[in-house]
Image (cartoon, rainbow, N blue to C red; front, side, top):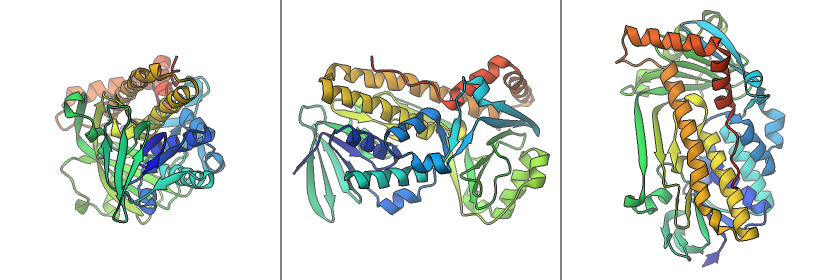
Length: 395
């Protein structure tokens, strides 16, 4: 039997970030991860970090490579039917920006810093179960190399994603959940080719949405809206590149550099919120509590904001005995979650084509685009949400 203060379930970026922050603050923690470390690093995920997320990574002591290799973006771009517009993020958000730096690299950096700090992470932890989570003595059991283990702890942080065990351990009648499923997905292709533009380009087109993104100055990531009934078997590289050229501005299509796909996959789009982000001694963070469409680049950043709140709370609890602040975790997180869900939903509705939409809907979408792109208030609204709303203090 092992004793720790905070048991963290999941070694993705949110679990590792929380663990590293707690370790630096002198709060003991153990991370359990169902998959291997190599598998965790193989996940292809987001690559746009809000300024608040980047600052939190720096606070965890894992920001050196991000600051060296990450690409600062002071703006982003939008296209409607080939009409291209630039949005100055710094100008309309009070000087804030975003950093393009892959989630895989964030995870790698946090892994390395945790190893240097001597933090304990158990990979390939099978049959993880949470016990007595509504008591003063919660504990976690698991198997590793076919041997049973037990961890007694004060609190449990669920950073194990939408399909993880943590949320499922909360009594079903205590869960308050909301979900919206969109009738399309994103077909993504990653290639070792220079990005077609020096900033992200969000493209609304009558054939469907497209996004020109990047991971570095030599690695690009592109997306196409496809029906939710589509499969990867219906696509090859040539077909993808041809369709992308139809949806992006003509001048970009002419200079687009194509190449072999490092990875191609289709991701469904949905919005999901579990409002029960804290129950007993369990706290839900990141995808365990909420899913947003990738349109607004909020997934990882929303998880980081959960980490920021949980970390400040645990410091208050262990340094000042402030258990009275525990209800503030859910209150603060949900206020930010719903704002991010709203923005991601709006960006999705704003930029995608819906098969059920008629000519009227398309003209309204065009009018909305004209307003937000040409109005000072509209540009401010997009910029403030895109760079990330400020973190709220516990008290």
